[in-house]
Image (tube, rainbow, N blue to C red):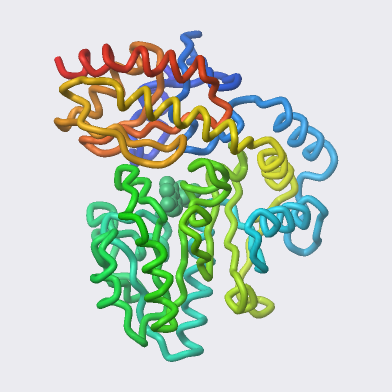
Length: 388
Ligand code: PLP
């Protein structure tokens, strides 16, 4: 029986059967179980910041797992302290950190902080964006504005009101003195890599300041250099009250973080929240290796090359390119993203059919100029195959 058939028999059907079984990777290249090589332009959904099997990541994780793999939160360890300090240094704003294992858990922590803030100040509801994605656990799902994945699991224990993403007037109207917090992605990832109009995050900051609501930036997909900045909100000159991170932080090892700035960093009292595995030494060692090796200058250079290359392609199926840094959505003139994903794989490139008319491109941050050129060079023919 093939690996695919065995997967289908052994797993719950929530993922369907993925079309390719991967066996190993090195840099931007991965190999499937049949030995076929691909250039990885999706990076495990914007996760493998340093690419696959980066020597610094391998060394950090191997050394840590051979030294001390787990402590639980009953004991502290140096890697978690170093990592929290390093994140705060990069954030350049005083704050406090909580480590979780995933993005959805980071958002659960943020939601609990916001609930606590709301109870303290008589604020009863939350605002989030239509089509936004914040995760799959019940709290994070309650904040998620994608009806198809949300509605069947409601009703939810929190009152979340949704506004169109990018519309500052609608946000202003929705955020009253009874709103506890506004949850926003600085660019919507799962919705199709959709950046808001310029100034939207700054407007959200002003609206929250005026009403006393907390601003929560979900940077689970957008941070750790992905946009050419350590954190996407830094490019907008905006500091949220709460920030959530995951994906690229661990470079492939599971870790999430919730950062509270100023008073938001001290909302939890002892015993309010916790995680057995969150911030485990191995994931923290991996994240430290990521933060030590992401080169923002390189990201900006190759990102400009990728964008310019894609924008220069004149193809009837390619309507445009949107996004920031090494995090792009190729927007199609017709809903043929599944065909693009398949044609790309056949040509030796991994991309992701994110929305029917949007293909996500998010290579490792170590992708080289030559690898970008190979992808850009192959993309017109991929589009032609997909259009057939
Ligand atoms: N928030 C955003 C913006 C995301 O893109 C994702 C995952 O795609 C999540 C939260 C959930 O993260 P995880 O899958 O690690 O739970």
